[in-house]
Length: 503
Image 1: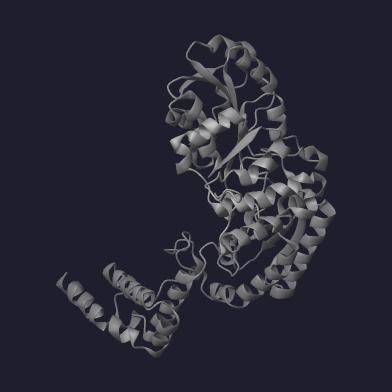
Image 2: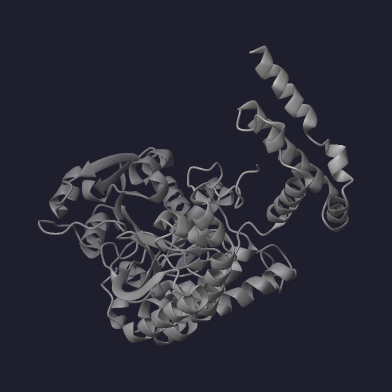
């Protein structure tokens, strides 16, 4: 035991001092061009990493302690990676169109332009031009939403969960809220309708069964303490077969007959009928408003394809009441969200033109022949870049909408499959994610899959360059030492580092 302790102290004393590292010419240059404080921080991190490996016994001999030629590049890498844009651009080859982990839909050029103008200059956020006095920030999107949805007024908050919470709290705190058991769903991030209802202060009254709820079930549950009926579009799951739910129109008539409100969370926020492009039916916001829903809530970053936000539309007196709710200030949106949303909404004034103006609709409406040609170009680029190191094929497959939209409704696509005898699929997928820009894929039948439907035309060349780079660099290293890309390595899965551990 004493020998181990003595040896450990010897190893610690062999480490270069932080001050010595900071005097190294490369690190001095780094300090001149990057924040000196952060360079010092990364230098200490590298030394602490080596000290930990000595402590846990991974390094147990002086000869295995990394030298300056390893430590200095490691510091440089940590500095540049740490100061880089953390929300870097990626290529979505995974085939999930609204990929929550990858930021959902790309913003349309009109939204990008509006966002840039608001971000780089002062803007009229909450000031009236005529009077010069404070105004309502929601007025920027209200006229457009009235036109697109048929609702009297609107309110924008930071996401749809907040929209639902604000609505329920504004109208049902301390009172009963009637909802079908079949609509008490849980969506991504453990968002559960019953939990939101509880937080809102509403008293939840469940009616019907999981698969069938009748109008009479709702009517039987109405009491003097009832405030509203809540209808929830189940979004990320669908019941098939022996199933029945009550329409918005029928619920509206029942609610209004008993002086109750009908609140509807429509979720995905479709403003147009997707069937016109051969996709499955998804309930739209204008339909819900026309059928009598008093308040409708939905996401801005799903089928609307805008920035993350929650949109509330409905009767003016009800929207005004929500605006006065103290919760509204806590969940309101800033100028960036409102500008990007406004730039997105105006595209829906010409719904037939969406495939030409909106990246999301261009992606979901692209003919299969177009997707097939893109897949074949991707395959050729990979073969040109990587030679015979991979087996590359183009096959039929399906993409999915994602984010709870169009559940269990696959969209036909064409897939590029990539496999190698030298690397496992997990290792290849990891290398591609660690490329610049990162390429995200999926794995099926022990092959890496690149779905051509979610790849943009201008990204095909980049995919070829990615394979050229990883073939010449990281894959060569991996083939020589298969453990270099082991998923068990610390930091690999978490994305903390794209370099093998020192030593």
